[in-house]
Image 1 (cartoon, rainbow, N blue to C red):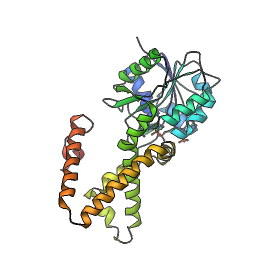
Image 2 (cartoon, protein in one colour):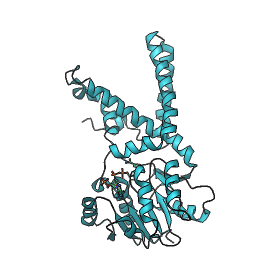
Image 3 (tube, rainbow, N blue to C red):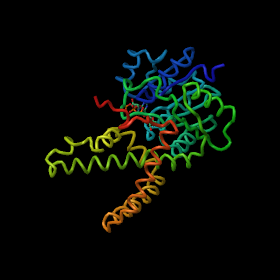
Image 4 (tube, rainbow, N blue to C red):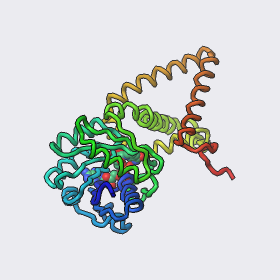
Length: 302
Ligand code: NAP
């Protein structure tokens, strides 16, 4: 039996439109209703036939849904929750896909007292945005982390876990604060570093006579992919996960200072040890199925 019969998706960008496509592919009988704040996005969802109905606003989208998934930037979750508060069907589960979980849980709980809230984060994405960027296999073999509040109904958690499993994800349950710390290390800080390095390089363009772009294959281009990610989404991630990001950033700064000292004093052993340990971590990421083993991310060098 399907975990849900009528699913409403609010926000039809990369993640929302991928979710619509994935549900269509893996659970074709589920009735899909979609909406987005942007009328051009709503029109595109109609054109692409991603949903059975496209509503003009979030309230109208959720009226008969048994699962509502908010796929908007983290900073917009509270406002959308307020919009749908009076419109939800009895027993509906409200979830989301936000990259930060403690602030989302607080915003949803404040706006939707008495509603079954099970926040979720599919750890899957690309640097692209909008309804044309989505694809149905985005969640295949990727983790989806559920962060239910204390006291959440086990049956509701199991239904949402079954939903994401059917979309091809591996599901794990975690406390929201722990999620935010783990993701600060694995996702948020790497994005911050990429944004920072690309900004520094662009400031130095004048000094280097445009050679930064010309010789970018020396590692820089891989940072530019990460730093091409959606600015609104990432602004909201850093504002919403401030404490964990600042904690981890402090550690990163100390570690960078240690490397700086090793370079200054010609301490090759420290540099070698640190780089060798990093290589082992890359191997572990590949062994865990999180990336291809092909050299240079499998780029075609023909
Ligand atoms: P996106 O492609 O920019 O799409 C977000 C969509 O939500 C846009 O069409 C946006 O419309 C719409 N929206 C914004 N505020 C809204 C509101 N109040 N009501 C209805 N629609 C609204 O972003 P995305 O990459 O799909 O990210 C969506 C969520 O997924 C974020 O919470 C993000 O943290 C999470 N996430 C992203 C990734 C990733 O790699 N991108 C991975 C995992 C999770 P406008 O353009 O008009 O604002």
